[in-house]
Every structure is written in structure tokens, then in C-alpha cells.
Length: 380
Ligand SMILES: *Cc1c(COP(=O)(O)O)cnc(C)c1O
Image (tube, rainbow, N blue to C red; front, side, top):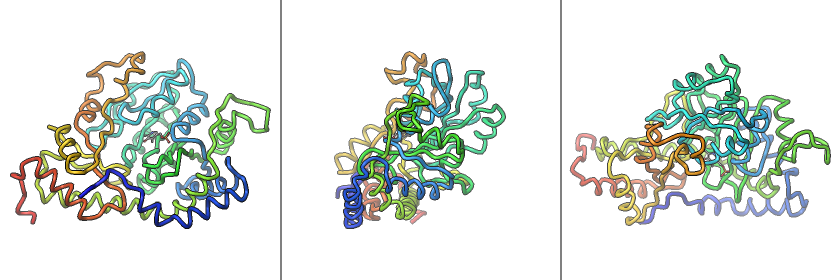
């Protein structure tokens, strides 16, 4: 049996006639950059996320950069964030000359540990940027209380978290600006690069719409130095076909996560495989199903590769230890939970179309690796 980490073949095949028709509509109108399909998508995304404005852009990475630009973040400014994320979380800060100030993560959710934020706030702190890692919101209630008390804006890196919720409020509606990605591996994936930004603030929305077209509200008159970062008409059209299915896909990911829990529980691998922690107040959309493997993670991974099972490590090097961020001044040992997570985590296949047989096979192969001696017969 083969179990890829992600397979979007089935999903795209089912929608192919609709996707082709949507692409045809763009060809008919020549609206290749922004245009009607993107404008409609923006309305649909705003309503999906429960915000006033959604603004398409060229990628999730650009969404983060545009958000920083919207708050005029630049040299000498500090942004508090997590080192345990995708690269773009931090490059958006350093590219503008600002300094990332890292707080370590919680060992159970892998999201930034909100209790460590207050001690890092200075008069140079311009923003706090949590990441909703793997599809579960960071502790936004506590984070927002701290940010509000200090008058510091919050930017959500919600690239992995479209549709995830804390206390019924969706990612992107939990702060001043939410940043999302349509990278094909995200729960709502495009057919190429793309992203969008959410906000409830009319002024910020207007600025973001200008920043994505080189900072001009009126053509050839530039109020700010922005970027060229627009969403393509083709992407807009494809994403409009996919968006109505998103909740069903995310619910299937969640059902797959629940099935893994049952299977691992029966296998009795509680010491060897630590399952993802779900916060009670959250809707987890399982962009990734990441387990902690306290010992022999890399050998387990090779074993699974041999068995035809795709896995990945998110992330093998925490951002404070990346070569290009050495100048920021962090060293090994500074953020121990992030460093430990980098050594111990492993992402297993979780995509919506994954079958029960494939999941049983994954768990059987892991059980076989750990010797099968720990099977919990009581649970059968
Ligand atoms: C995917 C991702 C991004 C970047 O999105 P792109 O569209 O690939 O530029 C940023 N942050 C996180 C946490 C991501 O997972």
C-alpha cells in the first residue's frame, strides 16, 4: 500500500469540469490580474472568515509582508513571534529591517507560549505575530488581553488555519490583520501561489489594497512604497470553485484525526507517539497531523518511507537557528521547547480523501516499528 503525505488528485478530479469552466470565464474576459473573479472571491472569503474585508495578494508570504507594511514596521522596530513556524513568518519582519523577538512554544500545541510575551514587550514592540500552527489557533484570548493592555496590534499568521476557530470566532477575525496562504498544500489550496489578508478596519483595508499595487490608490500616484502583489484571475476562479467545499474537507481531516486517535489508543503507543493536543475552545482544521516521537524519530521516518508512507518534519530547524537569522543573535539552547519539537515532531498523512485502510496501515507500520509489544488489549 502507498500512503502519500498529501494527494490532491482525487479532489481536483472531482471538480475538474467546474474548474475548467471557471478558467474559461477568465479567458473570455482577459481579467488575468485581480478582476471580477478575485473581487467575488474576496467577498466570499470575508464572509467565510467573518470579517469586513478580505484582500487577495500573491502569496501567504506577501500577506505577512503587506501586513507589516500596513503598520509601517521598519528598522529599530521589534515584532514578538514564534521561532517554530514556516520561514516566511520571520522573513517578513527581517526584510523590513525590524527585529524578531522570539518567545518559546507550548510543548503541547506547538503555538507560542502567551505567558512569555509580556516580559518581551519594550517601547520598540510594534506588533505581536502569533502563528496558528498546523490549523489550531494560538491562545488569542489571553494574547489579545496582553496586546490590548499595551496598545500593540496583533497580526495573525493564519496561513495554515483557514476556518479554524477560537470560541466560535474564525482565524483572521481574532486580531487587527489575518494573513492566509493558498499554497497547494493548505486546506484551501490554489493551482499556484496566492494568499489573502483579512481585517475589520476600513482604513487598514484601503491601505492594504493600495500596498498590493505599489502603494497607489490612484494609478501613477504613490502614497506608499508598496509591492506588486496581486492575486491572479485564474487563481480567483479556481478558488471560488473550491471554497464551498472547504468546510467539508476540513471536517474530514478532523474525522481522520479522530480515527488516528482511536487507532493509536488501541495500539497502546502512548509513550512512543504523543498525539496532537486539541484545545477545547478551538476548532482544529488539521492542516497537518503532527505527532511527537520522543525517541528514534528519524529512524521511524525512514521505516515509514520504506513502507511507502509519506511523512514530513515541520520544522527541522527552528527559525532562531537558521543561518540567515544568525545576526539576530540567538543561540542553541535559547528556546528549548522549539528546539525539542524540531527534533521530535513528525507529520503523518491527514488529507480529506485518506481512507480508513490507509490510516490502519500507517498505525500498523508504526506499531511494527516499536515492536508491537505494547498493544493495549483492553481497548479492543
Ligand atoms: C505556508 C505558510 C506561509 C507562506 O505562505 P506562501 O503562500 O507559501 O507564501 C506563511 N506562514 C506559514 C505558517 C505557512 O504555513
